[in-house]
Amino acid sequence: MKQRVVVQAIVKSGDKVLMLERSKGSPNVIGRLELPGGTIDASEQPDDALRRHLKNDVGAELGKLEVADSLSLVDRENSGIQHIFIVYSCSDVDLNKLNITTGPNYSSYKWVSVDKLNSHRLRDSAGYILSKHYSLISQEDHTINVGKKTTPVDKVLIYSDGGSRGNPGPSAAAFVIVDANLEVVASGGEFIGITTNNQAEYQGVRLGLEEAVRLGYRNIEFRIDSMLVVNQLRGLYTIKNRELWPINERINALIVNFDKIKFVHVPREQNQMADALVNKYLDQHKDDSQ
Image (cartoon, rainbow, N blue to C red; front, side, top):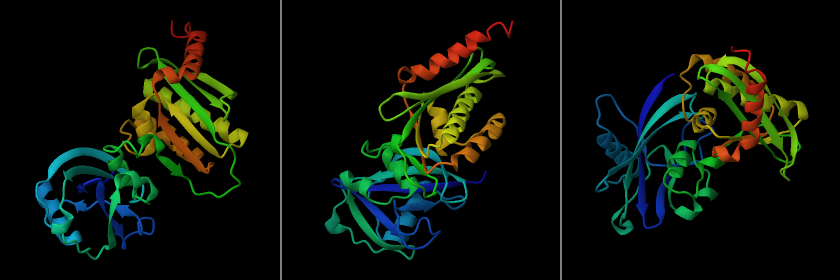
């Protein structure tokens, strides 16, 4: 997978953040708001690269820049390239002393109030970076819009889980589907032999997706207690384990059957139904590994 190192700036004035509206690029980014910044050239220091982009794109020289965060994101808007973001912050900017002129890639700039960020069309990268700093943009609300247009149906929740006794060891996976009234409409699982915890977690997602397809649901929200698996399914983390690739491909093939699908991390205590099923299948086959 190709990687690209990017610098971004969270430029704040009071409760407002500087955002730039894209006018050039692929169709799915034009018109969206993004943070100032860009890629780092070879042998260029991150802070020098950021100041270069700020000068070229907003015509401004800012004062003190402080490193605020670093993170990785597989950008679905850009052919799956993994972006390594180095995020800087610049606070308490005096608007009276800042003369902004947008560069050729942007149609305008906006100072957006923090409490209004959710009402704007943000690029995926901007939404993810800002969600790390402002709780109003919840990472739990990251939604994959698959793009098919069908008659909407009620959203269902799918609790999925997987576990291995030994890692690797005897493993099982399970799911529970509940409706808007939190009533169980379907559940199931299976013993999957000797695998790792992560493989079992993925198999739980696969089983839940297959049952949701069979039942004809179009809008689903997964509840999973593994943050690693959630972020991999969102595309925020890369899947380095080759043994997970076939399962992930199967999951991606199933995802296209839905209008909307969301992957949400929950504490283990909120996933007890699926966890109990996993242990049930493991107990049923505990003599298989002896």
